[in-house]
Length: 207
Image (cartoon, rainbow, N blue to C red):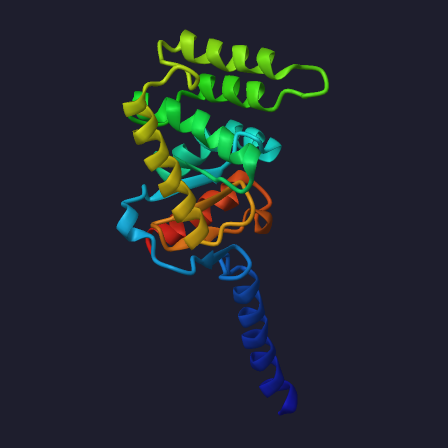
């Protein structure tokens, strides 16, 4: 009698354990976290990458952005942080391009900007680096950051100040990361591959 009762019970327990192991729902605190304040007022894109041209990991992330866009069906926007002096200068260079393009630079231009910003200062003078940055803008048919007029400077400062305000209010302290719908931040270290990160993004887009 005991064995007859035990067998169905074990089958039920086994099914529950297997169901638990198969639960791939992204978990708060592991795969994502809530942004301290709702950033909806800034009309951010559904997926916004928070990054810096000074960040090596951000440069590597650029290579998987197209795949993330394909998997999520969303165009990923960018927000440049201003953690320190170098990041602030890099943000000014980035937004000089954004305001003239009315959007983010092409992947090719982004790679050129990353390469110029991340040059080793021990081997390259500031003048040479500025020349490389200018060449990137010249090749794209844009005014480089060292030649913008007063009107462009005012627009640039507004864009940089807003980026700083958003990243500060969101308490972003590491890049790269992604903000979803202005409400959630992806924990990149909680994902093992691009596909799992895209799954979390899609989950949060629909949350």
